[in-house]
Length: 64
Image (cartoon, rainbow, N blue to C red; front, side, top):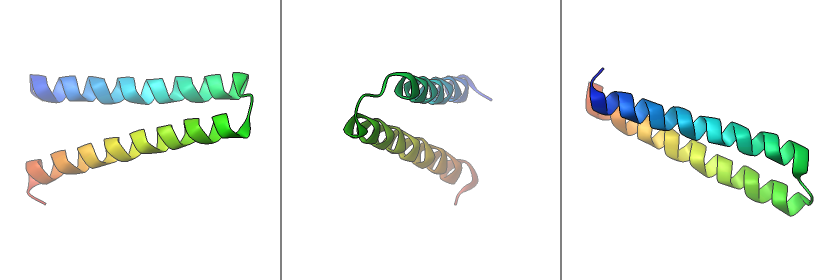
């Protein structure tokens, strides 16, 4: 694993950790259903971005 791969992995892990923290905060402090929906949509968007990033990396790496 080269330095760029290591840094990308660290960024992905931080993003996942941030999403977990958002969910924990949501569970403890959510006031409205709208707040819950907005947070869940944000997390969904972040997961879709991470999925696309991994797919793009794999396509470059293994030529998919």
